Image: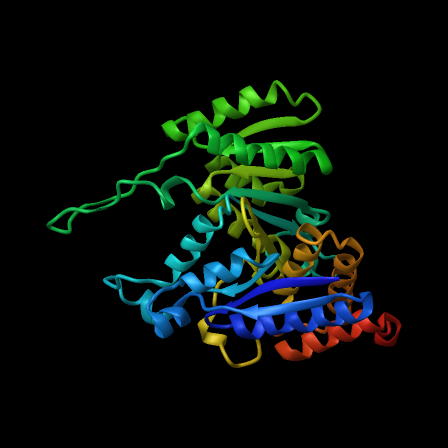
Length: 360
């Protein structure tokens, strides 16, 4: 089979980690008789430097005509340290989400038995934790209008806006995920304070009446942040608005012991985007030390969600589990020897081709 993948390495460590995902996908292609065609596009700071736009029209066109997007990371210190910059790399990410209609970000949080001790939380708290955060991506305070600053520069304002249709759309997706898992959905809001959150809760309560097979509960976001640390195993699927989801999913990432382990998928109207949840980590760029596993697991999500290649996705996940158990990992989670980014990619690709040869 032929599959066309828009490949957007982006900034910082993006090119290095995406290269490892490609390496693993090419190994999958050889073993399962698939042809993955990787076509590259500009995004983020790199795109600003090249063409002055963090998400050029050419990149949008590439994404729209592809079957999936493999994305690295966005961000550069020269823009982070310039609060007056009119064009920022992150605007490219927001533009990509908006123009591709990516209204939902799916972030699975799964613990690995061999890395339980790496988590800052006690083993008995996190062992067996397995849940999904479904975050609304194209509404809320990140996109709301009006926004701006007063003429004297002493006041700034952002607006949080949601429509009932946007809320129904994301909750329907979350209900679908819950139906395929343990049939429990937690709706996170701040309905005791925010009008937009009250609309979220009212809408969810109306929808719950037609979904009697799924247990639905409700949490204020501050309580949810606490419960994620105290009792993460209670959660199955969490659905929430854009900013709350941004914060909670990053908080949840520490449960596994490293940001470098968690993949994500952004899905919606057009082509889906698959990316690690971590940032561009510019301090490590070019040093061949960044953890590529989150990107490689994102590629596994791509195989499953965009191409329906479940066996191939499982082969990647099995290879990752084997590498963690064998200690073939980068410095962020290494116990003894730390492997380079490229060495981890090589090992995983070799495992795909011949698991027995890797002594697992």
